Image (tube, rainbow, N blue to C red):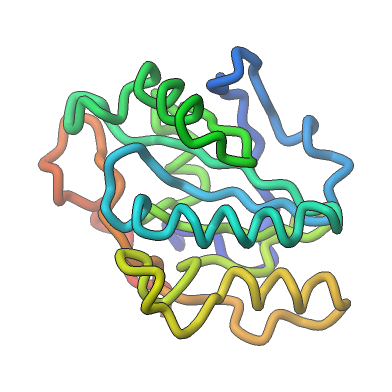
Length: 193
């Protein structure tokens, strides 16, 4: 069995608290023509380095009915800056155009098979996975990126075309699993391509 969702798989539901004080599940995004769920955090240099290109991609596609959901599944015991309080502070400072959810139990990260931060999952209107992997090919220094896989996948999906590259390997820090070494990954987790 694959650790990470593969193209064609259905989006697992969730019930998670957000920095805006609400709790969200998949049904809260039922009107989206496409849904981008991405695993992120507060401290990772790959996240911080690519936040603005992710913001630009979100702002480009949101008017076309795409919604974005960021999920922080990192253990705050591994990295204190990944606490919910720091999530709230970060959203207040950065005003990102997405909902930011906290997966304290890490159950949602396991359900999706999140490998790294950031790790993107793009679902179509039926909430079937059409793309998973990296956002750009150089997230730590996004200004040097030459490929925006997330942008391409969304553009192809919205144009009614099959996504030409449905899988890439996410680039970033590994998810910080509770009670594990900071560099530990589940044994069944592996590269996607």
